[in-house]
Image (cartoon, rainbow, N blue to C red; front, side, top):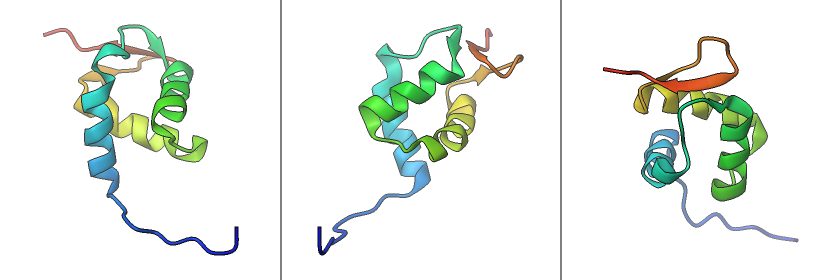
Length: 77
């Protein structure tokens, strides 16, 4: 590649919102952080170095918690 032209960008918030809408059928109670990161990389092209930050933001949006820093659980209300 000699020249690359960026035609459009989106904010981290917009990316998180778009991914959240698409994740409904993929995220489940007890999913590991590693599985979530692989899902983000495979289906959404998120670079590995951005996965942790994005997952932290999405945990809040999805009402999830990670008590052992490995498995994600939905908050039961």
